[in-house]
Image 1: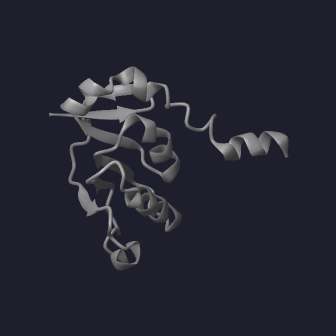
Image 2: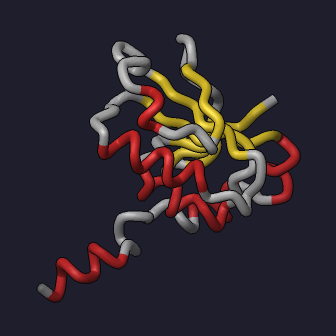
Amino acid sequence: MTVIVTDTGFGPDTHTGAWFDLAANVDPETLAGQLDGVTAVRIAFDSFADGRGFTLAARLRRAGYCGRLRAQGHVIADQYAMARRAGFDEVEIDDALAARQPADQWLARADWQGHDYRARYRKTA
């Protein structure tokens, strides 16, 4: 089973359509035209130490992708705010990780916009 993490905590998977699955090492430039009409993209994280999935998400958002974007796999609670800032809507983790890092650890990072350095800069400018 899997657990979906959002800004409100743990929940079930509500997506019923198809996913366009990507590995974290995909060059987004090779995807030209392939995401037309795609409403949900899932990027697989093989290791929490590999940040390429965050870069890929940010590049997809900057290229104009507006659909659902999910990080799947080895993303830890400490990385949740970074995942949201990169453009992910949600994170999919397995039950074992959810047991080691319960919802309160993820929720502690759910205020990702308030703790973004850019938000602090805008307040002083």
